[in-house]
Length: 488
Ligand SMILES: Cc1cc2nc3c(=O)[nH]c(=O)nc-3n(C[C@H](O)[C@H](O)[C@H](O)COP(=O)(O)OP(=O)(O)OC[C@H]3O[C@@H](n4cnc5c(N)ncnc54)[C@H](O)[C@@H]3O)c2cc1C
Image (cartoon, rainbow, N blue to C red; front, side):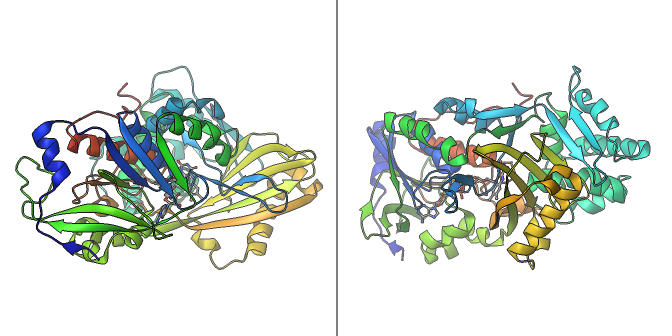
């Protein structure tokens, strides 16, 4: 419960009267990419950070588990980034992890008849660089390609903030069933983790503009060469330790103790005029408490209500709006064969249940690992794991004949039911800014208002923005957010 009091806000007032209060401390709650980015941004500017993570590892949803059958590290789901993810790559560069990403300058698209098209850039300026690749797509007619070119042109001309339902917009802009299913849905379902009938124009525009039209490198897919547990592992810990970030893993925050105070907010335009909340301390699940000058809450949207008192959740629209966000699931099917079954590093599957297949190579002697990802996997909801596995293996056997000749050693089906928030039309009105109405709290997470869909890039952006909020409120404004590709 929040307690109403009538004292002043001591540390904030003292900061305004006496310049920077040093040393300053912060508790970051949540060790996903948003929390990591916030911790990195704050630590680089002299803030002593304690990072509290409920699980026994960092990385959050972008993480691995240990497969009990083999003892191997397995990613809950393959994660990829793209050339347009400038903040994500900045974070990896800062920590020294960039060499763990392998850029894929060729994308492979395969239809059920096993024909494939290679998508790669020509040495021409954007947006012409991918024109010939689109023209070569074997699964679209020439008229389809003209329809798509017109649709992309119209998309670029759409107002950046306009967010009507996408499907009627596509139909009104000369798209037919085939271009919708085989082009727009193929790209957008994976990028936004949502089916085309549920998404809005705004993020569809963002995906095509940033990923394919704005800069030659935007579309390049970056695939980690190591499990995510390794990616967000030793080097990250070493960097954090060297920058005085104290990591506490395996302990969840139970709740934030928040005080309502009357305060003079003259000159502090980000705070409400007559009343302000402030975090006094955080209580951990083991009953101990932590207190600091500043706090960053970087947990998933469906966990905010666990730690913010109900009174604050109800009274502040900022928090109350979060309940309008809804989740979208992702299913990944992990298969280990006794021999190589794919020659391609990855492939995008057209007119199939699986959307991306990733070839992870020989991960142990005689074990060849393949992962198939199904985004926005609601249609698999009724099917059990065995049925999903059967469906995906049948599909792979039809697409890649070596699969039928190989022996399946092991399989695992993983569904993340709340993988990401759903990018429904107008979703941004429910996504809060990182500057919260609580004086010493910033909020981060891929679901906060970043201008990006739920991605690792969105999470890192939110963390950098949250750190910017705290540093600005502390009287130390800095720019952590990196420019987008095309602004460089
Ligand atoms: C299956 C799947 C596939 C995806 N594929 C991609 C992809 O290919 N490319 C891409 O860019 N993005 C992908 N994403 C999205 C990406 O994983 C997320 O956008 C990003 O990792 C979110 O980071 P975050 O820090 O905002 O949240 P999270 O990663 O969820 O981090 C929040 C952290 O808070 C911790 N926490 C929660 N409650 C508490 C508490 N009370 N106390 C302490 N800690 C707490 C959690 O344990 C977690 O570690 C995928 C997501 C999923 C689920």
